[in-house]
Amino acid sequence: MVIGVGKIGFRLAFCHSLKGKRKVVKSIIARTRNTFNVSIAEVDLNDIHQRAQIGFAIVGNDRRLLNSKIDKIFEFIENLQLAEITDTDMEIISL
Image 1 (tube, rainbow, N blue to C red):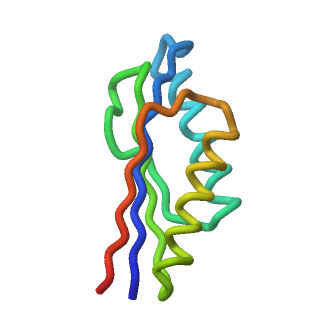
Image 2 (cartoon, one colour):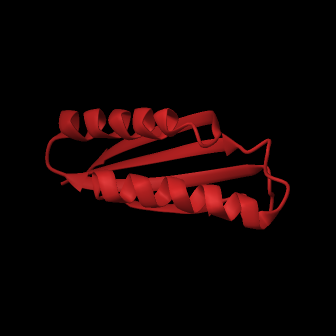
Image 3 (cartoon, rainbow, N blue to C red):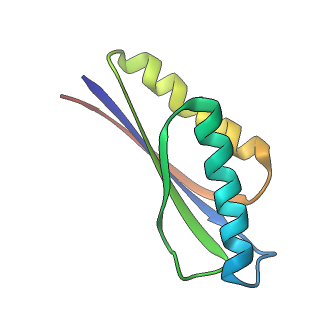
């Protein structure tokens, strides 16, 4: 079993309230979940209205396939252009 984990940091310069941030983050999460069928959630920086961090996880049996899928998820979220990506991180764990 292989587990792929990704984390994406965002800067939301135009959001001036937690309500505005929540709208953008929920949109990113919903679109990604619907397109890739991954477990995804906001994982950090919940009370800061101009920064966000989203984490996701996928499970499979082929390390190369998971690596490719994680790269596609990063690219998909970047192409949404809803927020500026400040950093990305990924890890693939074999059990």
